[in-house]
Structure formats: C-alpha cells, structure tokens
Length: 238
Image 1 (cartoon, helix red, strand yellow):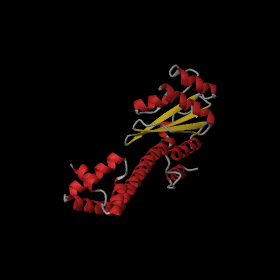
Image 2 (tube, one colour):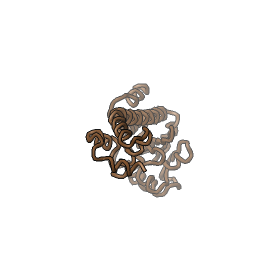
Image 3 (cartoon, helix red, strand yellow):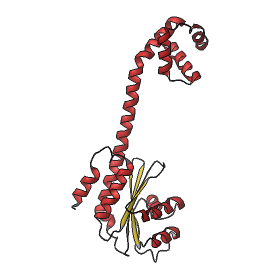
C-alpha cells in the first residue's frame, strides 16, 4: 500500500477513530505494514503525565511495553527523555535495559527502534520490532515517522475537539438554566429588597450549604415563588 494511503487511513475522521486507543491501534497496524522486516509494533500516549494507554499489534509485545512503563527503563523512556529515536540493532548484544532485553529476547525480538513525538503537552511513542538484528536503522527516516507525526497531530486535534464539545455542553447547560436563575434572583431581590448581586450570592450560598446545583435551587425558589423562604433568605443574606 502506498504511504499516502496509510496516512489517509490513519487520519480519517470517525467517532471510533477519535478515541486515543483507536488512533494508537491504527498507528501500530499501519506502521508495521509499511516497514520492511518488521514483526510488530507498539505505541503509547501520555497527556501531561496522565495515564499512558498503549496499543500493540501482537499480545506478546504487551510485555515489552509494560516492563518499560513499570521500571521506567528501556527504549520508550529513553526516547521520551532524549526527544530523539532510540534503537538497538541487536538485543542479543545489548547491555542497556536488562529487564526489557530479557523480555524482548524471550519473545524472539532481536532488534527494535522507538520514535518519540511531542505535541502540546502530549507525548506519543511508536516502537517497531524485528526478529532479525540490524534491519531497522532506516525507520526514523521512513514512512513510520510520517505515520507517527500524523497520529500525534490527530490525537491532539481529537483532544481539542472533545474539549470543545465539553465546553459547548457546559455553555448550553448554562444558557438553559440562566432564565430560571434570573427569575429566582428577581424573587430573592423582592423578598429581601436587595440588588441582583446580593440575590445571586444568596442563591449560591444555598447551593453550597445544601450541596445542590444552583439551577435546582433556583427552580425550587421559582416553584415556591419565594413563599416560606423569607426567614432562610434573610439569614443567608447576612
């Protein structure tokens, strides 16, 4: 498959692909397919130090990722620290990362390379593995790098999109509840003969002391037209 088709598949829009785990799964599958002598791939993502989801093309590779995340030692932590690709041409002769090396050799992996990608506080890694030594030297300059760049960009874009949807939902909720809050403020202003700021402060105090949403408090005030609330409102306004 041409590189442009791999990029097109990875960057496509769909509700499923917008999930970080789905993006990582697509990344490792496409990167493994377009890399010669690659026996599998793994990818991780962390957002400002938050939990790091991972994806692998084969279950045996999950151990290679978990041992690094648990120990903080291996190509993935090294690549993130250096901000540059980290490779091992032959793990049989590798002296670094003893735990990672043991797990990799047990899985039959002889060489690996890890590429880091950083975007807006987000860190993505792409690791490629081979059963043969010395065959992954060109990976940092090949299509896998372009795929990793695109995946990191897509995950940041997806995060921004989700944040925007959350803010839009919050704004919509605020707009829907604003009329009833304004009505409740008007009732409180009438009962207490106070200004709008004081009325809103009273409603907010009721919300905090009763552990109820401001909109629920406002609805109760409006439903009762302030009847029976005079003493409570006066005490909260002092």
